[in-house]
Image (cartoon, rainbow, N blue to C red; front, top):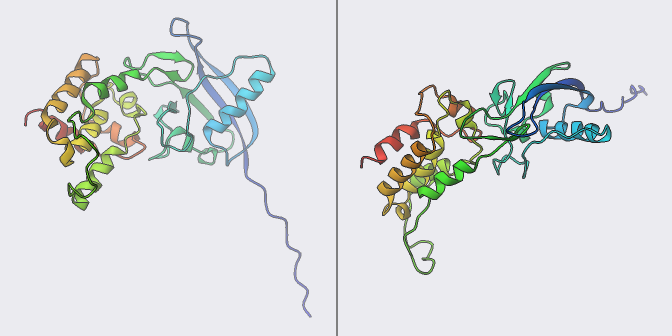
Amino acid sequence: MTSQPPVSPAAGPRRLSLSLRIWRQDSPEAAGAFHTYRLERVSADLSLLEALDQLNEQLIAAGERPVHFEHDCREGICGSCGFLVNGQAHGPQTATTVCQLYLRQFRDGATLTLEPWRARAFPLIQDLAVERAVLDRLLIAGGYCSVSTGQAPEANAILVGQEQARSAFDTATCIGCGACVASCRNASASLFVAAKLAHLGQLPQGQPERTRRAQAMQGQMAAEGFGGCSSNLECEAVCPQEISADWISWMRRESRR
C-alpha cells in the first residue's frame, strides 16, 4: 500500500505592511497637513475602512485623536464613505466604494495617500470627512414627484416596459457619494443631477413635472456654484454604480422640452 504525503495545514491570510499618509485637519479653520502612519502585518482581507479602524485603535491607545472619516452601511449602498486614495476617488478599483476596497489591491510596503474630496461645494469637516448637504439641496429643488395621487394606486394600473424600467433603475442606483463632483476638474454635479432627473423622467409617474423638475434642479446646481461639465468623463470613470455620462446630454435636452 502506497503511503500518502502528509497534508500541509491551510495557509493563513496574506499579510502586508502599509504606510498610510493621511490628511489631518482639526477643523475648517485650522491648517491641515499630511501625517504618515504605519500598519504592520495586517490581513490583506481587510477593507481600507477596517484598516483605518485598526489604525484608530492604535491612535486611541497612544492617547492621540483618531482619524475622522465617514461611514455607515459599509456595503457600498449608502454613499457615506468616500475620499481620495492616491488621488483617485474611492481608489484604483472601478465600480467600488472605499468600504469595498480591500488591502489585497495593494502591494506589500505600499504607501497610500488618503485625502478628502477636494471641491468648494464640499467644505471640510475634519480630516477625511466633508459636508455634502449641498447634494440634499439639489434634491429638495426638484428631485421628487409632488403630484398628489391620493391612495397608493394598484401596482399594475400603470404599465412600465421592461427596458424602460431597467433604464430608470440604472440611474436610480446613484448613491450620492459625491465622487463625480470631487473628480471633475470643474467640480460639476452634472452626473448626479442627470441621474436623479433620468430616474424620474423615464417613468410615467414623473411626466407631469418633468420639465419643471429639470429646470429647477439645474438652476439650483448653478446657484450652488458647481462648475459646468468638462466632458472629461472622469465622473463616469469613478462612479461606483457605473452610471453613464451620456445622461448628462440627456439632462441638457430635458430643460428645453
